[in-house]
Image 1 (tube, one colour):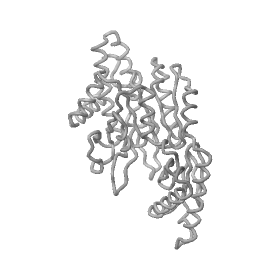
Image 2 (cartoon, one colour):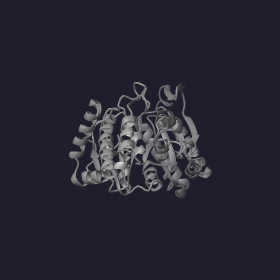
Image 3 (tube, one colour):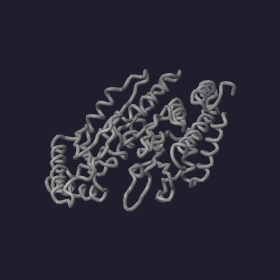
Image 4 (cartoon, one colour):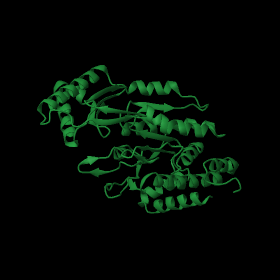
Length: 366
């Protein structure tokens, strides 16, 4: 075991030892193969470091936390792995899905690719693979078409956004939407002088530059507008803040909770361990990763920068800060599971060692 792996394993083991007994026992049972489980995670600041203020957007295969090896190795051991991100398909594909796919397909354990699923919720998209490395297009199409917003919902939502924004501009003291706003999309940066509307598959977006209190007031107005026009449609929609400068409207079924349930059903998981950095309750706001506790048989492992906003909950535990904490826990889980497989199935010893070597957790001489 390398010095880096030993450190990660030791820190991961220490975190597990601090867990409440029922969470620790559940985790140990999973590592020993006594329950069928899966692992899922948010992406930004959970698997890789992201600093939007400094425009630092890491890729899974270049981030120094080194999570790509353990992620791939979990799949190679037959543990389903899902990335559940609120970002766009292009964003998740470039920075997460493709690096992970390439990493697995470069190994001799190519069939592990079928244990991977990535969800890009800003567009309602899933990416799945067959054992030969090809995308599972039939399953993807079934999921993706089911997440599209009906036309009548999209029209009403657009009308509501336009109407409420027009009223805001007419009644605001300044008569405009603040200063010009720089928006980055992929490698392109645009100067926004007025609201931008985007109709994506599954999501209606309004990008605008206003103070947070103004955005909250606008969202309340949009919700009231939709509810007055059609209580039935309103009951099926989620209208909430998106990124730093957006208002997003989507179907209620297009959220992390539903994606988590889909993942568990799709891979027949008896339990799910979910990692996220937005597990908090602060100033009346609830982080979107905390919603995963609403699913049955789910343990939420918080990697928030700080622990003080992580709520007390029987199925929530703060692991530590950021991708390093996630990597430490995954390294512990991976090594414990590998040892259990070797002890219970000696015939798999060689392949398990090869998986650990490919993950960078041990050298060929060990």
